[in-house]
Length: 226
Image (cartoon, rainbow, N blue to C red; front, top):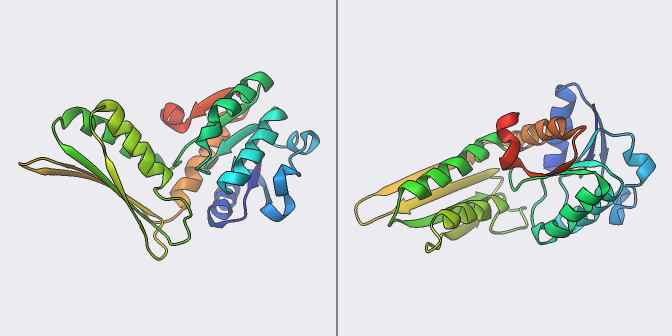
């Protein structure tokens, strides 16, 4: 496969490295080459099996729109743009393109999502709290992963409000903790990422899965197929 990676940041660099290790050709395009998605023309995109975006929320919306308008297949690891999802989903379907998105492409975090749902089902009459810690360069707070955990818990227990505490420390790749507390005991689930490699591996495997497909999916819906 030939993959296009959008974003020369730390995660994008690891994505390119993992893709090479898995035997794929890779082209990396940074923001300076792709302002307002100017590089994402039909002829250019036609040469790639899939596109992987790890940019910024503002850039991602323009990138996704350009990719889908040209019928491309795009995997989006950037968060903070989901208010545009309904419009982009409609564009995806209209153009016969493919969009696969997630707040976190780590397979371990996907397991945490499943466990969070099971905990919310089992721990009735508990108070839930979520804490997340990331490196100081992370711009969004709370993290997209923490917001996903909050939605999962509150969808199972509609009357519950799962508060989120956000911390930004050093070079922390990502720590997410769910606490369920009652008058009698406390239950805790935790995922700690040691590096960005887990996110990168999941994103590349997602690109392998989406190649040749058309549609729109959350990574949670297809991760079991990898």
